Amino acid sequence: KDISAERASEIGLVNQVLPDADACHKAANEMAVEIASNSPLALQGTKAVLKASEGRSVEEGLDYVGVWNAAFLASDDLTEAFAAFLEKRPPKFTGE
Image 1 (cartoon, rainbow, N blue to C red):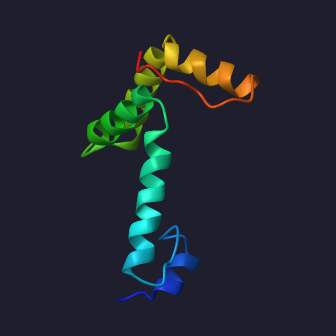
Image 2: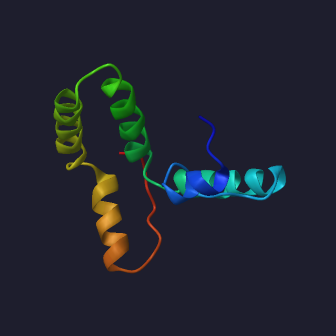
């Protein structure tokens, strides 16, 4: 069954409905910049979690997330994220 763009937005299937291809490219670039500003470790972890969860149960996926998150707790990037938040400044991630 086809769903209109407006209906897809109403039910949360899409984040945004844009008027044309140029607006779509602009929004995609803005999102890419936002994603790239995050910790490299967090991005790697997100990709790893998505890949590891493929074909597994929700419980197995959550177990993997727990293991990955525990390893991330000791990272310099997490320490930097908290420091930047408290100091009200943009973080400077190192990927470590």
